[in-house]
Picture 1 (tube, rainbow, N blue to C red):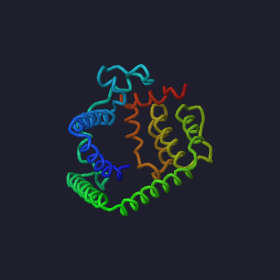
Picture 2: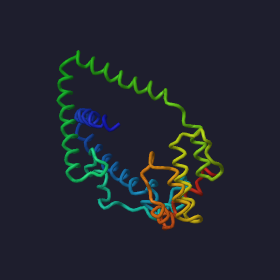
Picture 3: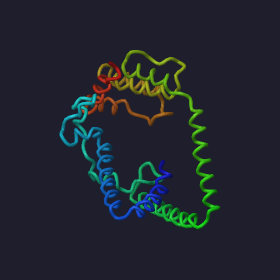
Picture 4: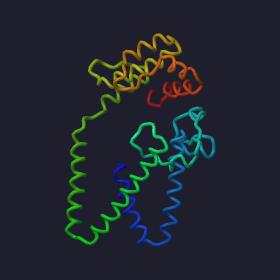
Length: 237
């Protein structure tokens, strides 16, 4: 999806230009609202009723306590518009600058390519064929992806503590179940039991977590709220 954003931005610009000035005001209002909603989601407010009225919506199955530790980031609503594209998992200011320059260059190239396409019917047909082929290839690949429904049911048994995974479960799912088991073991079994489960999970699918740090989080108010929310999930009823 991220690779299509510059193309969408260019095409949206041409569309708004044809619609006139009122469309710019509408687009600006929608963009600002998008910044607010996405920033709220990043900050832990997946229910806007909690953000604006401090009470969950009527169709929200989660208790109000789930949002006790939700808070805006340092930039507030501007968290979403910070330069975030980079080639690093821990980007520095220079990485953000490089990302901005690359995105700006890509948008410029797309704008120039659009002007070239507008003057050449032959290139338009080629671009259309390439686009249809690209989408078709992904549809075929997605159609061949095996169903995840059986493993969803198995994972639900792990979360709800109504069963365990069998040996036929994928290794990644077994490792995740061991990590969840380690978190649940912290209040009762303590660090040694959690450490044994984390060692069994390994670090192939998840970064290595110290049992002491995991148990410290589980015993904190935020960890207790997270564990209680998992235990009281509507899916387990």
